Amino acid sequence: MRKVIFKIELSLDGFISGPNGEMDWGRPKAVAEENAAEDNWKDVFDMLSTVDTVLMSRVIYQGFKEYWPAAGTNPSSPKSEKEFSRWLNNTPKIVFSKTLDSVDWMNARLVNGDVGKEISHLKEQPGKNFVIWGGSIFPQALMNLGLIDEYWANVHPVILGSGKPLFTDIKNRTLFKTLSTKTFKSGTVGHRYESVR
Image (cartoon, rainbow, N blue to C red; front, side):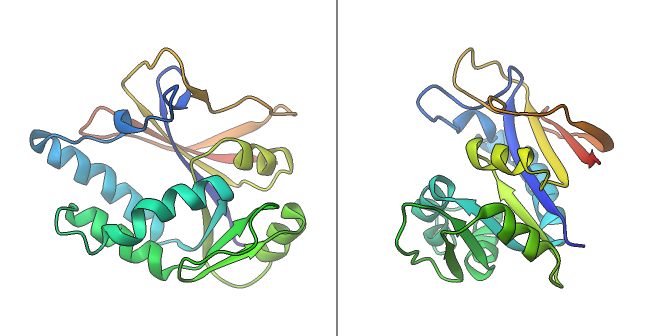
């Protein structure tokens, strides 16, 4: 059966963004840190080799669509961002929203119905895995339905002090099996967990 992978970046104190939605703390930017950034991207592309569909909430869809479609052709984009942009543009994207009437990113389709039924049905179809990037409300809804199979959590060596927390509305105790742990050149530690059911 296909798996749903939740890929998330978070601070040491458990925030997925700063108080104003800042994400600049989660990526090495300086030229001196270029190798560190490539190390993180290699991990992303390793995961993407197992994925053929992206699951998105309205918020993630709108945020990603604002940046990623054009990043592939932007001369100032780093090589890895260009590669990721091309992958994302060409990969099927399923957007779950009760407020959007349509989606206009290539290879995207909108689902307004029951999230749990739709994803349960999709997991039974042939294909590779699914990935969810970031966010908290949509992934937590899937967690509470028992639909996330693996968690790829990158914990960055920074304390934000305040911001948007990852876990706020989890209904049940959840046990995990640790699949792997990796320390990146940036100092970020990647934890890969599997849900124990």
